[in-house]
Image 1 (spheres, helix red, strand yellow):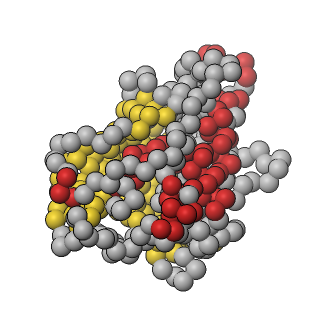
Image 2 (cartoon, rainbow, N blue to C red; image 1 turned 180 degrees about the vertical axis):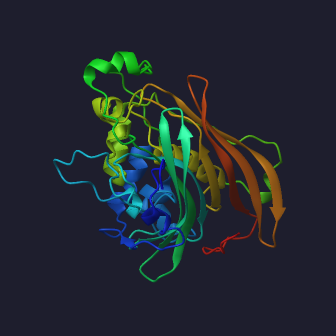
Image 3 (cartoon, one colour; image 1 turned 90 degrees about the horizontal axis):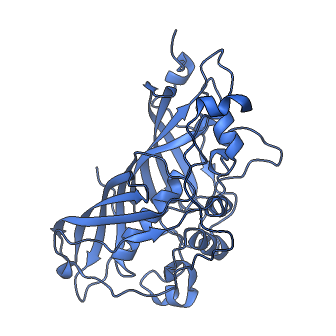
Amino acid sequence: MAGTLITEEVLALIGQETIPERNRFPISEEMAWDVSDAIQDPNPLYTDSELAQKSRFGGLMCPPLATWKDIAPPIGYFGAGQESHFQVPLPFNSYGLNGGSDWQFLRPCFTGDWITRHFRVLDIYEKQGRSGPLVFIVRQETQTNQSGQVVNQAKRVSIHRGLPAGEEPLQAVDVIGNLETVHVSPPEPGAVIPKPQASVSTQRFFEDIAVGEALTPVVKGPITTTHLVRWAAANGNYARIHWDLPFAQLRQGLANVVVNGSLKNQYLGQLLTDFAGVEGWFKRFYVQHRGMDYPGDILTASGAVTGKREASSHGYVDCTVVLDNSRGEQTAAGQATVILPKRGQTLPLVWEAEE
């Protein structure tokens, strides 16, 4: 196909399932704590085994958006960090930006669970971006535990930017003339950013919720490269655009290292699990990533209730959610559904997927 980065071989993958990937290790208490620490979410269901065992869940679990740990690349690897393109053989080596996702959380992921990811390619298409051609890969992901039970599923979009044939990477001398670097003031050297303290918030019930009310915002930052490296260590994604400034600028044409889309998802996820409380359930999460955030940014996750749907023992609360940075940009936005119990009722642990 002349003039396109998508080959016939790539197009033939649409509708196909790729090779399942199993986590290298089962979910452990250390992994749950590590993720919680990296995203600075003190939720006791991830860190306090005694409280978690006494809860309706009966044990420690992972944050719903952190049930998978990538396999880190080998020492000495100098690629983009996602060279496999999620098993789609694109004809260039590029990073894969998180374009957005639609997650459904169907059961808890407990410590001790073995998670396997199954993928089906739904679509592959190309668009012309401001910086060159972009390839979009749309995949259906299903995560199952060791018993074959579906833990969660998602429709995910990744965006891949590659250098067209014959175009060379930028040289160091070209950076000033070719890039507009985004500079954001970092914290002063030696500044200590306080960590949130673990606490159990007052449980909300479906009857308490009013359409239009705001969710309590979650504020993170100022973000530093330490946050990004800490998140890489917790989830195993060492894509170099998130921590290697020369690589991000010279090899990928970015203005700075960028905050992971998966980390931004975690901040929005904390907004919703805080709202759900220990007795509620974070059921669905749709998000689009609309811009980039950089070290030095302060990120605020916020939202509002847009609707209520009543069931017998519980109710569905629909929300809008957004992520704004301290430069006045809204870099992620979406919708979510939280399930809250009615007073005197207990939620089940397993839920059905919706269309």
